Length: 245
Image (cartoon, rainbow, N blue to C red; front, side):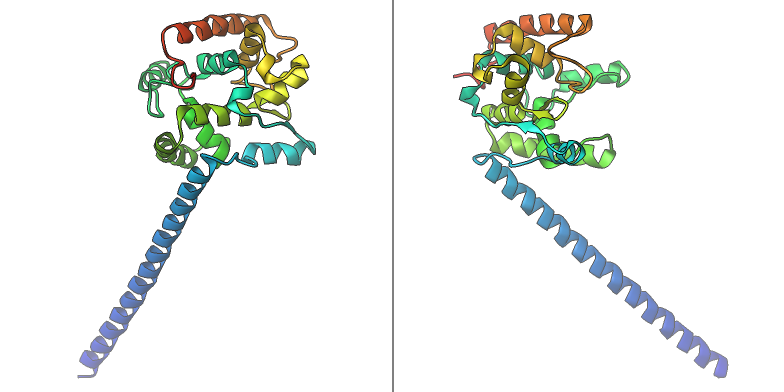
């Protein structure tokens, strides 16, 4: 009898412990869901806000400001940027910008065939990374970027996406945006850049800290020449129509 009573008592204790564990797990699950919903709501609110309000800062700009003590940045509207600069950036970074919904499937396929040796991020993905996330390679960031990019594509126009990109992209050591770059490298505003100047600036975008606009290497010159041709091509074949009036 004593053994049976002990077993019953032990069974009740285990059941109580199991209920407590389930209760704790349930509480954690509920809070995790609430946190996810809050983060999602905050992101959606920012996407809507930044469709009409310019992002005040990005993680990269803030990081560089902390590292260098200052950064060079000046926001300009899309109409204050030379059209050839916009075309050059698209030709350099995402020639099918007007044709996709945030992801360039063909570029991703080519990157996979090359063993991942080249990037396949679209301008839309880069905007999401620069404005809402952080730099660096991680599956967490990539997963968030992949989830968030279609939402930005739905809410923002192509012109707005490109406008934000041209204003937040790193264009040199502590330099952000094409206006600050045009003033520093050429002594002019972004709306006065020539095709050659725009192509050279676009040529450094993949690696702005390691490439020079004012003293380009032979490789950068070749890339700029290719971009110059590409900018003319996408204008002629209609792949710039989504951001040009």
